[in-house]
Length: 502
Image (cartoon, rainbow, N blue to C red; front, side):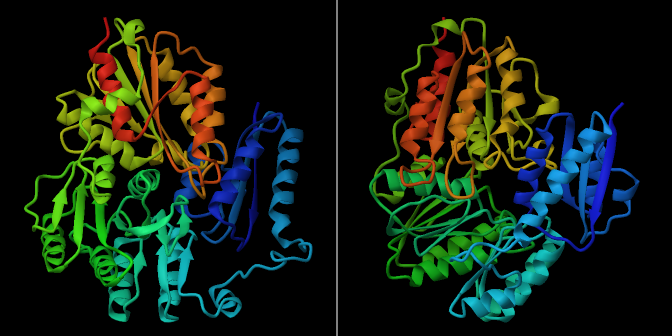
């Protein structure tokens, strides 16, 4: 019978990504069935309860406490895992060798003392603490990027109003990507400097557009993330409008791209009015939104790929032309009539849904856009498009861009499904992500049977990223994955393969 052990570390905080990586390592130890290191908030305690990892000691934890949860085959294995967890948690406290990383500040005040000329603070703490830390940064005259999620919308509104009054940008909460003066922040890619500015309520949307621009031979001045709720009516697009002001005044920015899922109608009107005032040109990509009446200095596009092309002064790419780069022989598909999309990028999943919907295909998703059904309502022959970054897949685990193993089980299920003919994947590179997502995916595919199926993927990134896009593409091609130049082209190729099956 399994044993469950909890150790509570009072008033102990460590970055959640580091904790999730430790949890994964502990879960791989001999005799350990599952493991989690989480802050003791009510929501996290419920996650641990649902996973069978919470004991009486952990139930008494408070929000500022760290809970180690181990479920193991026996007490000896559990004790070994606890010891390994304790050793991991002690590492930051041990003296470093002399050098540049000998000391790291643990508070905003200490950070500013070390870097008195800093102009931006990146906040990545549990959501219940994020607003307070962001307010401290604003009070010290810093722009703020809030990576944390689970921040109440009322706190977001108050922070953005405070920032607007002080002329300080508040990116987020739940802002995963930004590039400021050529410096990638959080989940972002290494792209050259250039004349195109990007404003996005979508992290992977910014990544896809910026990387396509880079691979097209041009560059990005700044990419400003807003957080996914900025374009809701309650928030009013405060950060988006401030970002337009900033890029409009920036002499290095000649063209501005605005990308998001459909904003509230009242916010659309404000954005359009602000674009009309500018002398610069704009590309607007509201994925899945209704057509909008734009001024002469702006054009709307329906895909991320076309947003990048238009920003570079190129026309949208004809769909038939885009198929030439993806060599797919669908002869083996025969009775397999479904596409299964497994996405690390939520916006890439939304783009795939949009394109299938507009092509007249029946599709379902766990995060459906307008006109796409929920998974629960899907009929047997409908296509499935899954956002693996959704809470269902990431509770207590890292995001799939950090831990590609999140995709392993859904991938095995898709390849075992006799109705699935095409598996559609995205591989997202960049800072903050897994060091070798293609290698992990290739290993997973080599352990499974993909015979009689087509696997097509896009790789969002550049050759200058830590993972090197060219190397990642080569790894995938060696195991038979068909590589498209963009997510949009991967979707087109997947649809075409099914249309041409015998």
